[in-house]
Length: 252
Ligand code: SF4
Image (cartoon, rainbow, N blue to C red; front, side, top):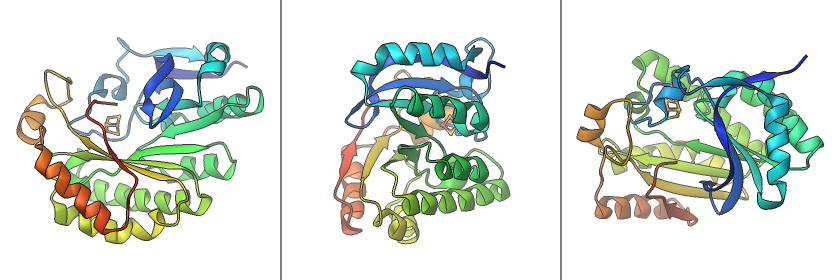
């Protein structure tokens, strides 16, 4: 039986979705978070106006035509792990049949599916946000956010144990205080320092007219950060021993 995946489409060759790499990028619909700054919120909400069922075969066929140009098949969303079964099949085919490396952009709040993919050796690169303060950025009730944050921390440990190349993106809003970042780095630093390939991307959040976020009101209040603040965050990261840091000024 043909496997289907709910997707808003793909880009055959992308230069911006994986740091310093070229990718074939596939967007999957649906998400378990409700980040107020999300600019992909229509696909995160499974909007049938932007999402459709596509067969894995169709994706693989298109992917195979891009092979000579790309470093990764990069799957993003939404939250791709909500569709972990067809995603596993796609990653399996991409690796076994086409020999392409697989990159997963995930919010890392779902434990079981993430564990399955990693244990099966299906993920060669992970991109994830360090959303701080998570209670504000997850857009969910506090108790739910707390549970998902625990999952995030456990999944980060898993990435570290498997030593998977990690692109850790820090979305920066006015709610991110240096002391909040400090506190978080104290908790996760031990996992991050074990990784042999880690890049940290400081990503200032942008509001309209550059993006169309889920909550325009939230973004008008909390997005748009000045350069001095970004330097301050950079200093905090360096103080904690991280040196491979980049700033990304466009939404990804
Ligand atoms: S920013 Fe990412 S994790 Fe948050 S709602 Fe949007 S797709 Fe989901």
